Structure formats: structure tokens, C-alpha cells
Length: 250
Image (tube, rainbow, N blue to C red; front, side, top):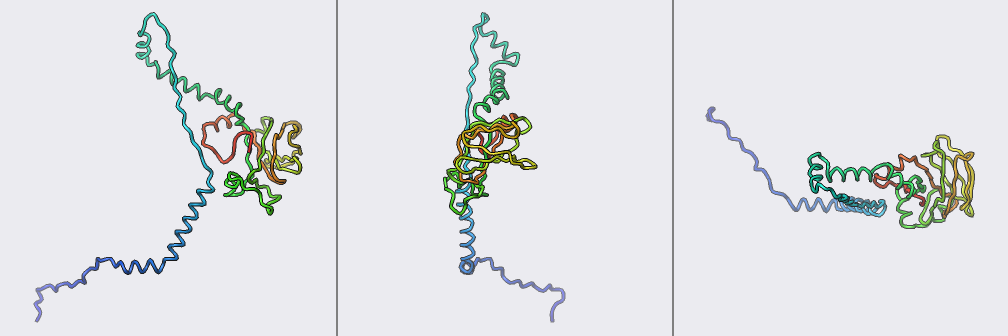
């Protein structure tokens, strides 16, 4: 007869903490094609990105500002007074840096390098930049399409617009034998006229003066030409490179 005061002992199954390597290896073999497929897809995506991504170059510059030495009858007393007053070399260097970053200096950089003018080729989605960068020529079945391929470019000779048209893109479409036509890409696109390479044309009742120095592209290829506002051009001098190409050539 069982003693009711005694608590029945609990019998628990021993925990199996051992790893069945054979079973895991079998699971890997059963799903080997799925694992290989996923690995191949990710490897293919990585290679495609490495080949198609636009390279970004960055450079650093170090400017050394030397303080002009001045001869004073009091000797080093002037330097001591400068340090006491909170001036000295640090304030002089800060002033020189402010001058280098001033809009007047940046404006001169914009004028000399032509940063006000931006030429943006109409590229294919995703792979267009890589195609032009690698110089892949336009295939025959892409004739007449607006996308720009390798070896096709536009070089501006002159672009002057009124203030109201600054920042408004102009669509330049290549034609036959050095001809082209221009469209104003605004809320209401409208045809502005035609021109020929090397000739200065007046469009929009004289609001636009355009001369294209070189145009090597198949008929139908399109380029967006923008005359940016001066503040926008100055602001872009301190920004990282964008997809659009600044300057006079694309």
C-alpha cells in the first residue's frame, strides 16, 4: 500500500543536447539547389552593382596660411598684446578661410569653370551611366530612341538666357547632318526652334542665345541643357558630385 505522505518522484526524459551533424548535413544536401540559387543571385547582384555604379572620386586639399611678419619698434610686445586681446594667428587664419569660402571667390570659380551651365544626357534607366562610361555604341535596334549611348556627346559653345529662364531645362534633340531642335521643358513644353552646330541661334524672341560647338549623336538623342541660377551654381561647388554633369560637355 502506498504511503500518502510520500511525494511521487517525477521521471523526466533525459534532454538530448547533442547536435546531430548527420541530420544537418542531410538537410543541407536536400536544399542544396535553393542555397546555390540564392548565393548565385546575390553574387550576380553584387557584380552588377560594381559594374554599373557610377564611380565617385573625392579629393582633399590642405591650405597653409602664413602670417605676414611686420617690423615693430616694440619687438615681440605686439605679439603679446595680440594674444592677450584674443587675436593673433588663429583669428588671422579664420579670416583667411572665410575669404576663401566667400561668395565672391566662389562666384569667380563658377565663372571660370562654367558651372552655371549643366548638360545632362538622356540615359537609359539603371544602366545608362555605365553604358556611356564604357563607351558602348548604340545598337541598330535603338535607332531613333532619345537615350544617349557611348561616344555620343554635346559640347556647348554659348548659352545665355534671361533671369526668368534660369533653371528651366532646354531639351536639345539631335537631327540629321548637324541640325538639332530645341524644346522648352517647362510645365507647358513648347517648341522653340531649330539650329545647326556652330551657328548662334536666337530663340524665344531673343530670350535665349544658344550656340552648340559640337554635337555627335544619333538623330533623336536628347540632352537637357540648364543655365542655373548663380546661387545654385555657387552652392553646388561644395556639394558631392551628382549624376548630372556640370560644365560645357556631356
